[in-house]
Image (cartoon, rainbow, N blue to C red):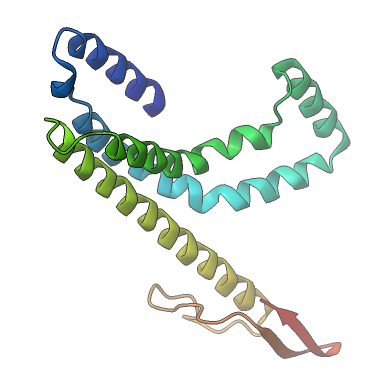
Length: 183
């Protein structure tokens, strides 16, 4: 079962339990907190999102694949494959927005207030971690592009401690003369 489906099932189950209790004792914060642990797997997905779009673009250049994909998209309705691929990327920010609204509309005296605040903090932290991981993955991709341009390729150029620090224009010598590339 997908995380989102499991999350929804847990919320629905809790809703049934909560309906038999006074409204000010409803409990949902712990479900969001638990969900934030599972959502850590989104880091890998987000890091590879741009690469998947690039791959998809390249595949769309192949006539047979493009026709097949158009047929699949028409059968699925109005949405394209790209609209499905972006959904996991958007999920964590949406959870943060949802939790902000829930916290804003939950009185501090509510039994679940502290758990909701904790869940919001955890989701915000996860969103920051995902953004930072994405920046690091993009920087490593840029470093690999530079490495591929170098001739001869230096040994030990790609190292875990090496970081791509700044974007700009790189001038380098090639067989054709002086070349430049922007990063």
